[in-house]
Amino acid sequence: MPHNVLMPALSPTMTEGKLAKWVKKEGDKVKAGQVLAEIETDKATMEVEAVDEGTL
Image (cartoon, rainbow, N blue to C red):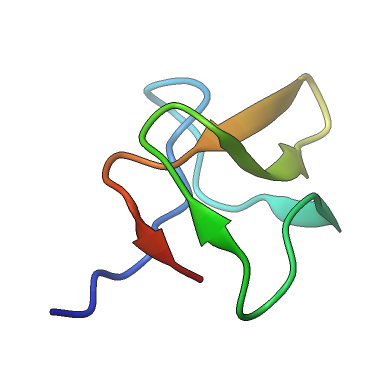
């Protein structure tokens, strides 16, 4: 079953952010906790982790 990859808010006031880099590629198998991408705002940079295992 597909799951959407959502951009987490880095702060309660965050309204937008930028996908800085994909760490995994389409078709890669991932496990929960593995880093999928890096996001950034004007104040912070953060890694987005998989919440479940599957194929990206």
